[in-house]
Length: 321
Image 1 (tube, rainbow, N blue to C red):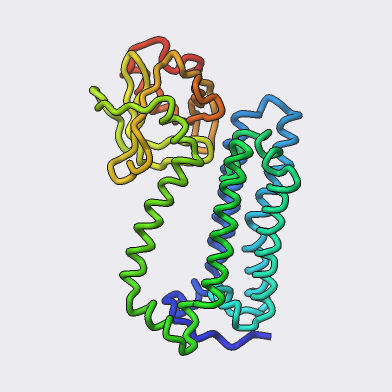
Image 2 (cartoon, rainbow, N blue to C red):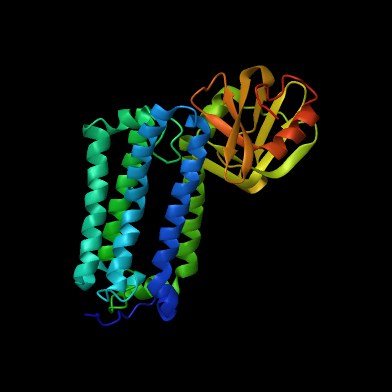
């Protein structure tokens, strides 16, 4: 039985297709991310069948975990029990399908926290380096990320349930939020920029690289600007500057993304490279002597250009053309 449409102030509620089917976009995004993550992982374990089997099991569980909420949401909408995606932003409406989704959401998050902290989950994930998820790295960093995520989820839930700005139900906060949207958005954007950049640098591994290879001096030489690379699970898309000389490899972030990302200069003697393969082609996977748990993946066309710039046979040693 279809429920009456909620009187929502959010703009998408006036776009029936987006209102009803945007969950498909998020599901496809999740599935695509899972597929690309698995392809990336195969680069490092393709010759080890026993390890591949173990990784396949844990990665399948990860893919189901991240995509299940969108499947349940879609089922509720397609069955007619919910009118659209934005219904799920108003759990106080009393819609049973919406409440079931929120219960599932909380059960999944609390189960994850219990597994990470009390059932050895952090230690287990630590044994599977290279997983393209935010829950990777040392057990300590996995616990920190889980704690931050758990706090954020619970604060978000309280705000949505008690102070929902999209439910036009006569409360003053809805009008305040809408009339002062530019101010709220500006504050959110600044906080997101500051915190998000730090989280990416810290948990993606850039901070660890900077402790070992930070370079405050300006790089003298040609730079390949607006290039892409993948550091552990973080994909830096068209925001990197790459340089090379006879001594080593230079890496920096573009001007607008430089916050919390110090410039790096890594000697060739401390870089080992192996050939990798991702969906978009052949890559060089770089490992660093001082931070062996991290790996940087660069497309082969950039590697060839950097090797020419370095003019040193030690550059990208181990990478097979």
